[in-house]
Length: 64
Image 1 (cartoon, rainbow, N blue to C red):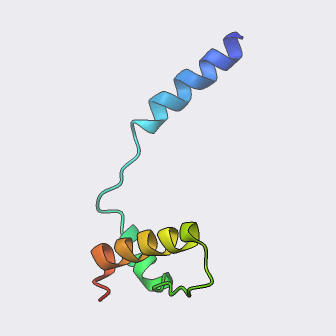
Image 2 (image 1 turned 30 degrees about the vertical axis):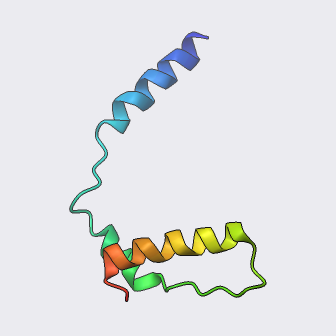
């Protein structure tokens, strides 16, 4: 039990050191990702996920 608590405390402490700005991750994403197209045969959930992916691409990469 003590070991688990120590692990949780260490994880919480290290999470505070993470950075999400200025990391260049957007450039990596935009270099690898492509817009997703869907068809009428796809499920509503698949279409929702594709639209969410494409929204991120529009915001980060300037997709039209």
